[in-house]
Length: 427
Ligand SMILES: *Cc1c(COP(=O)(O)O)cnc(C)c1O
Image (cartoon, rainbow, N blue to C red; front, side):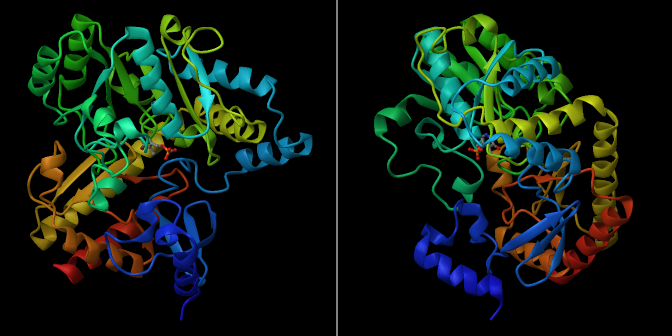
């Protein structure tokens, strides 16, 4: 029996489903999850001595590759001065300054410990600021596991077949209205039917959590206009896209200024970090400056701040990282398309920068209903065929993949080759 199998058997007796986050259990693709022992640059190494080319990168944070030296060094330096104070530090000021510099719509920012905390707090602030209770989210968008968002949630929640979770009260669910992504008309109707009751519209400006789905031209601007017209706050959840699609995230790329932004993943350089921020007048109502309560014992933790600062400083000072991410993404998706032409396949690839998803459907995917037309058993076989060839993909059709600059052209070509062989095997 492989070490990963042994560990998983034991884990299942101790941890629900054997994992600390559902998608890791491989339920959507079958087989046994791979237990990871270490990672460096573009590679993951498992407990059984296998090496994989890494296309998840911890769901985004490892945009510079694993164990990136400046981040490692920053952490090593920081741990000498103790791990937590629960008191303000210089690094938190530096972090806030850097974030507000890189993401201009963020005039003030509060650090938290996860993306979930960031979105949960942002929505509380939006409700406090507007004095309204309801929010609009989009089917298939994932905003962490706070109650308000587990309504038509993407990602793990789709994969497990429980878009609505037991334990979320009916009253909470009633305050969350949902619309199909890319459907401005549906949003308009919701606003009309709930006049003066909607505090915020929250979305992933480029979705990662139903697979990669792009906003259609005019969609983001249309939301901005609807929000302005109806005094609704526009919240961009840039937990995945922030510092990845551009230095200033999807909002820079598409030229849309949200009122609030939530961040996570890359912002901690691999440490558990999140943040939310935005307009000064809105953020000024957060405790202790204002009445909306939000706190955190480990928020702004000095080790996490050191890792995140080293990461963001590198990204801020090296614009060529973004050029390179574009090149890698284009090379890979062009290669996959060429293979499909060769094999007579016409599956849909959605791609922007260093994010992409190959959907096992011929239908264009611009919302969750489209994404669900994918052949999931086929995806499961494809995933296993890729794993066998040493490529570690996200173990669900409803996830984006995330490239890092540690990948080389040669490694991308290996992935293209593996992809072609895997498709040949499973079709
Ligand atoms: C991952 C993710 C979250 C939740 O972040 P956690 O750190 O897992 O709590 C929220 N929003 C989006 C868009 C995400 O991708």
